[in-house]
Length: 70
Image (cartoon, rainbow, N blue to C red):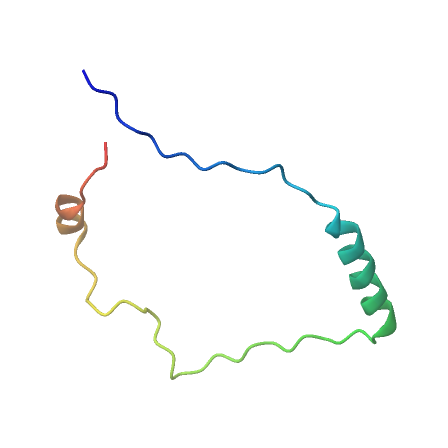
């Protein structure tokens, strides 16, 4: 029996020394700016209720078409 090669990534240890600087910069920015109220999104009649391009199939057809990965 012949053995086959297995490709595995060699990962480096994670470093998070940038997080402290990032958090300090964010807090400094937030303190220097006035808080703004976010605007509510307006609902438009132009947008479709569903993004599907096909009509919804009935439940039995959808169950028959479903392929299980197990």
